[in-house]
Length: 246
Image (cartoon, rainbow, N blue to C red; front, side, top):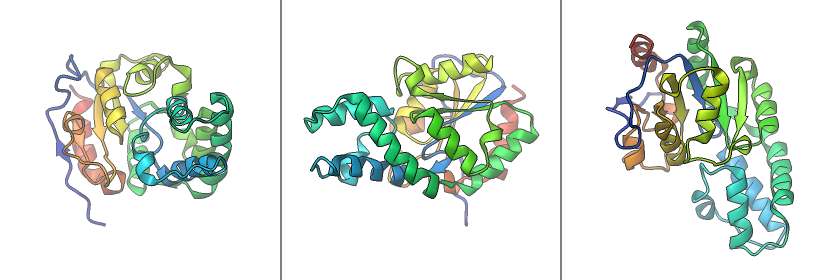
């Protein structure tokens, strides 16, 4: 595999108001960042709605990518006039997703080298996800990387989901680091915006279907235009090691 060159950007723009500090902790989004799981999420939504006679396409799904599950389900319920309550729909979607994810989730190969490199540098790591934290825990265990992370924080544990910065700020608080000393890996526009608004350094890994020229992606500090599969760990750590010495 030929890795896509990494773009090291000025970073932050109008979304991040303060300069970053030396990196002391690393926070990962889960879906689409650490693991290739978007197809599982789409299929769980498709099945959920098919059970109610509603057709749900991949194009329909695109507007929800990066949103936390509660907001997505609330919008789907309203858009399709579903008569179930939000929590029952969330529980049903999670059950469908769990059965798929435990069979089909794939760790992006370059991310394994990134995790190993960060462990070697003795930097604490956490996962901040819009998914259910118990299911995230099971998935990380199933692919053998749960021990890399000190904690998993779900958007259900904070007031507002991405693109609001709440989940990243709460994760940094629990890790005991200042937001400006945290580095975030994210794949969606909403996630990148949330990380920058939290005042954190951000690595953006837009999926091939997303435009890396999007304004939000261009404000990230590091941009991997082809997404996680195209990350070059050696080039990444060449850049990253400068961030621990600011």
